[in-house]
Amino acid sequence: MLGYLFDFKGRINRAKLWAYLLVAFGFEVAILIIAVVGLHVFALLDPAPSQDWGQAVGPGAIVSAIAIAILLVLFYWSSLAVLVKRLHDRNRRAIWLLYFFVGPLLFEIIGAAAGYAVRLIAASAAYQALAELPFLALAVALFGWGFVDLYCLRGTMGANRFGPDPLAKG
Image 1 (cartoon, rainbow, N blue to C red):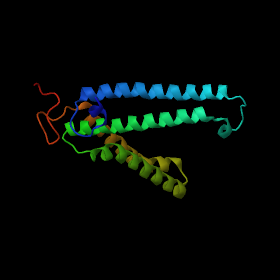
Image 2: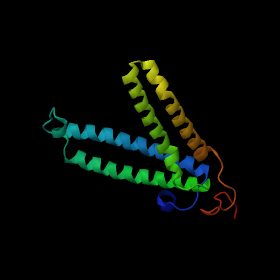
Image 3: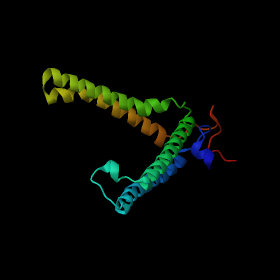
Image 4: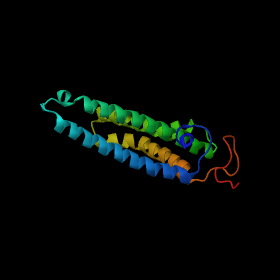
């Protein structure tokens, strides 16, 4: 089980990826609830409440924050491992994560910068939107391609350079 979550070698199929996503979503919701409730509980237990947030946080809240941070690091590491194995099932290298997730972010940043530059020059929100639109369209297209490739398409049939077919019988 730990190899499934933390090892970057091998392949997993779509069903295991979607199962992981459902569990991961539940995990994130649980961490959020624990964080919000924990901070409220520690604030209620503080004998001398302060208006200053920095002074109101006691050692219990700090320990909880550290524990949550450790859990989140483990969660994101396992998410990365699962996505890399899914890319392996599609006979793609891990570098494709940059194309599918970092690429759209870069297009959004470039689009925002282009829109800001046009806004400074033309002082028009309409022209700003026109300058941003092609970059945002590229970002959505690249992210959509990544979504379909990772989450919807079947992996390569039979063994590939990353291992045997996870759906193979026997």
